[in-house]
Amino acid sequence: MRYLSIGTGTEISRIGLGTWQFGSREWGYGESYAGAQARAIVRRALELGVTLFDTAEIYGFGRSERILGEALGEDRESAFIATKILPVLPLAPVVEQRAVASARRLKTRRLDLYQVHQPNPVVRDGTIMRGMRTLQQVGLVGEVGVSNYSLDRWRAAEQALGSRVLSNQVRYSLVARAPERDQIPYAESADRVVIAYSPLGQGLLSGRYHRGSRPVNRVRAGNPLFLPENLERAAGLIDVLREVADAHGATPAQVALAWVIRSPAVVAIPGASSVEQLESNVAAASIELTGDQAQALSDASDRFRPITGPSALPRLVRARFGQGR
Ligand SMILES: NC(=O)c1ccc[n+]([C@@H]2O[C@H](COP(=O)([O-])OP(=O)(O)OC[C@H]3O[C@@H](n4cnc5c(N)ncnc54)[C@H](OP(=O)(O)O)[C@@H]3O)[C@@H](O)[C@H]2O)c1
Image 1: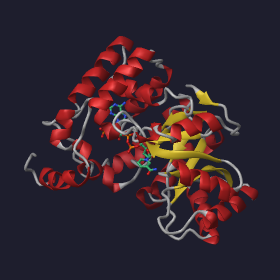
Image 2: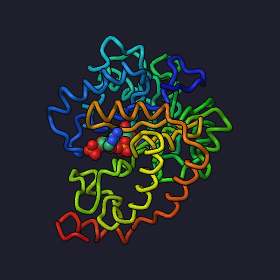
Image 3: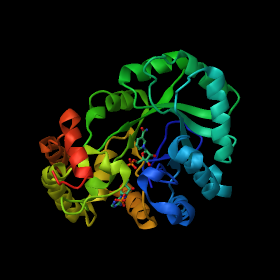
Image 4: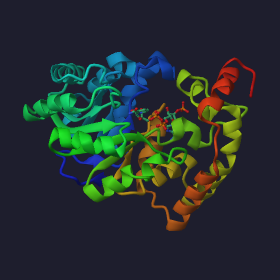
């Protein structure tokens, strides 16, 4: 495993583990996953040197935090726990109380990274950051982070906090490139971190799904990337992933992750539906892409033009109700 050295007590692994899947109905992995498998995934991740574990109070309405806390058990000190608050009512006392509730579910006295899950569209960050500052002062929170923030709002949050907001967790992968515009350059120049979520495009970049075999759960039924037409359009990108993967004796998913973390300021938090996937994702940390390979992947990604936005909506409805396109 490779780690970031940016002055956090426990160093952050370049590949972490996303745990939205733990106990949340929308992924549909069922009770044996939430019970035994999720625990086995966390235990194996610890063995393999993963330190970054990402969860949120909203995942499974607290269940993901509980499963993670239980699974970490006595090894909690080896982990860098990142959780998130949904800022519905972003008042300082509310933030403080919600952090305590998250810490209790996670069985910990310290949230290593406490992230604002999404920018509140109405209320600016002064009040929430006041709560965060108090939480840092009393030691319940180590680092403050944000998620789904523009660069401007990230920097405004830092001004409001009066110190670094360590990370911005954003969607970043070969099928979601927006953070390259300014968030990643900022992280690189200011010793901040971009935490890439959905780094495998929710499984699309594994190359496992195609028109005749689409995933069925609610998360992906609502994701335009998995429209039959978009799966067809992604074929060229998957072909390039396979070519590069062959050159490394790796899988397309591993190459997709290696591409995401090619910037030293980016870490990835893939979710996993099995211990085998977790093991494969961790191994991606040691794949070094050549400049030409990274460029070929970026070019293939540029050529991928999925149907998105309003024109995807009627297609999603039709696909959901079994009428193909
Ligand atoms: N901050 C936010 O707003 C936000 C939003 C979304 C996610 N997140 C965080 O980011 C984490 C990851 O994002 P995500 O779960 O949306 O997407 P992802 O990590 O891109 O995709 C995860 C899915 O890909 C498949 N997969 C994983 N490893 C694989 C491998 N080695 N080979 C083949 N398939 C593999 C699995 O699904 P199948 O096996 O079922 O195909 C798995 O559930 C979440 O758990 C969560 O912690 C945060």
